[in-house]
Structure formats: C-alpha cells, structure tokens
Length: 519
Image (cartoon, rainbow, N blue to C red; front, side, top):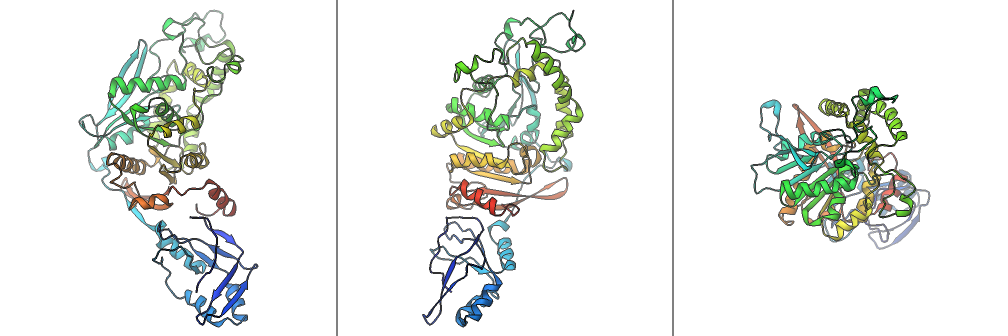
C-alpha cells in the first residue's frame, strides 16, 4: 500500500482527520475512495528523529472498501492486521495503518516505552555514604548575615553549583541535592535575605509598645516600630536585593563562575542574575520557575506609576500595612495552613515532607518573619521582566535548562512551554507525576538530569544530553520512564524531553483535541 499524498506538520500530535486516500494496487490500477465519514487517528513516523506515531483506521472503512470491490487494496489493509508493526527504515517519512490494539502495542514498544534506570544513588538506610553538609554564615554587610549550606568541598576541580530556594523556604529545601550531588560536585544552597535563616539579627525598627493596641504582638515581633535604624534605612526585600546578594556571594564566597539552579522564586532570581551578571554564570537550570515577581511598579522602569505608591516595602511599615500583616500572618503561619500548602504543591502525597514542614514552621516563629513577609509582598518589581531576563541571558549565550513538574498547581506547564517557545533550542524536561517542587519530590530524577546536563556542557557536547542517544535526537520529543529505588521500593516517573522542533501552537491544538489523553 502506498499513500500518495499527505500534508502534516513535523512531529504533529495524534489528531482526528477526515481526508481522501488514494490506494495504488499492485497491477497499477487506481481506485480512489473519499471517506469523509471515516475517522483516522494518524501519527507520523519520522525516520530522522526515530519517533513513531500511529494511525488508527476506522474498521468500517475496510468494510466500505470491500463493498467497492477493491480486493487487492483490501488484502493489503487486512494484511496489516496480522503483521507486527515496526518502524520502517529509510530516508522518508510515512504512516502506518492499524487498529487500536496495534496503536497501543506500538506505543508501548516505541520510544515512549524505553525505561532508564537511575544508578548510583546513595541509600542512607543501607548505610551508604552521602556528602556531609555544613551549615555556615556569611556576613555580607553589617547586620546582614546570610545563611548557606555547602557540600563537596573536597571536590576542588569539579563543577560548582549554587541552588536558590523558592519563596518561604531556604537552603534546607535542597538537602537531597547537596547530599547526592555533593559526592562529585562542589555545591552551595543559600537563604535569601528575609527568608530561611537569613533574617535580621536585630530589630530594624525598635519602638515602645505604649499606646499601641498591638503591643502584645510587638513585644516579640520585629519591624513594627516607627523609627528605622540606619543600617535598615534602605532595606527592602526585593528581587534586586537578592540579585545583589547572589552576585557578592559568588564573588566573595565561591570565587568563580557557577551553575545556578533555582526553584520557583529562586528560578526567577537565577535568570535575573544571569541576565545582569552573565560572566559569573556557567549555566542556569529553571525548576518550575515563577514567571513574574512583585506587584508594585519598578521606580526605574515606570517612575510616574511608581509615584502612586508612596510605600514599597521599606521600613518602617505604614500603620495600615502593620494591621493587614497582623491579620494575614496569623493565618499563613498557622501550621495547619502550612501543611495544606505542602499538600497542594506536592503531587505525590507519599513524599515525606516532615523536615520541610518543621523548618518552615520554625522560620515563621522568628520575631522578624512577619515584617519581612510584608516587605517582600510590597517590594517593587525588578528592573527586568522574566521574559526580558530570559532573552538577555540567551543573547549572552548563557546555557539554560528547563525542568518542570507537570502537575504543578501554581506554575502550570503552560509557563514552561512559553519559555520553550521563546528559546526552542534549550532542553526542556517535563516530569510526571511531580508538582511545584520536583527537586524535593523526585530528587533522584532531578539530580540525574542535572548531572547529565552539566556533563554535556563540561564536555562541550561530546556527552549527550540526558535521555538522548545522539545529538540528532535533540530535535525531537522523547518520552522515557525513569526508574529508581527509594526506601527499598522501586518507583517510576515519566519524563518528556521537548526537542528543538517545538511548536506551542501544535501543543495547544493537541490538547484541545485530546484533553484527556496522554501528552
């Protein structure tokens, strides 16, 4: 059988089609059948990429073809029902026709069915050694003590990796990365100022509690006074402050360019920093990076609009902000609220989050936590938007890697696909099931992908990207099941690599046509 003509976009998803098919019989006689009533489920075989998609021929079409007397063509079609379908070799693209069972069969046997076993993960329960973690403080400025954790200090000539945390957490959220990657890399995880253990060492606005109806709260809460100490006169916990913090930390503590990995807010800061200081960055990995940060206009970008907001996160807090913070913080810092948020952002509820939960609760009890939260929420936006930072980093040839948990309820896959659309050539790994924090939920997978990506860059491409067999496959979408052992049990997640031949429009169309199918 030969399909004489067809017109499909490269690497198109499975689509329902109504089309005309011209069958050419073995005796060169032509019979044409226009079957607008018949449904095909078609997928392309791309020999260049090695990808396989299937075509499902409506059974009634075969019956119709038989009634029209095209016996030779019918025999050909029926023959496909009894032949094991395989990817054909050759320098052309084509289609295979078969039934639903065949489609399921090939899907399982094709590239999406390939499994990758993640090796060499330390199992502490069996006494295997992990990299020891050191907790440290670095005094950036007077009263500004930055907490960070490090591992792998003995790996002098190994790649250097810096992890940036999301909002409301700290370096402790990367414990699983430090323990594992610290075995063969030098790794650091930092607490942003105003978060984690990088909170002020003294009250920036001390005051008397006389005549204040919130005195009971102020007795043990910092930052609610009326007069600001000199060291905190310009303090505002903004993305620009964190960008400066990261710059000085790399220059003064690490001492050389690094690979930066950021989750959520940390992803935004990582990209923002790479755009501002590309000479200090060897590569950036965005893990469910938030695509925006800050609600108030930046005074440099929008000076006139910024004047409409007389307060933008500095100390002292205005009276109305103090009262508002009191109400909101009481709810947010409740352990039940924290537990509910963790339940929401982790797709796999079997993940042990006890340590993360206890550390977050501990942070909320610090006397500076409430006022720091208010400053963060009212801080202005950065000088660059996420998109501008992305394009500037790309223009400066900063390598970028994308890793996104598919089941993230906050930064949904759409945002990762938007980034991929703007820079199609960057590797993008979509992990499922995984939520907003895949580095903590499936650290085995994230560590494996991160190691492989860094090795690809360190070897200047002589080592293929993770999940790829050769460079040519970087053009295509590839599915892999990654298996690993945790606590004596074997677990598996699906990882999709989006290649350079990427079309956001095709992704949207396929979702509209098949909203409940596997993507």
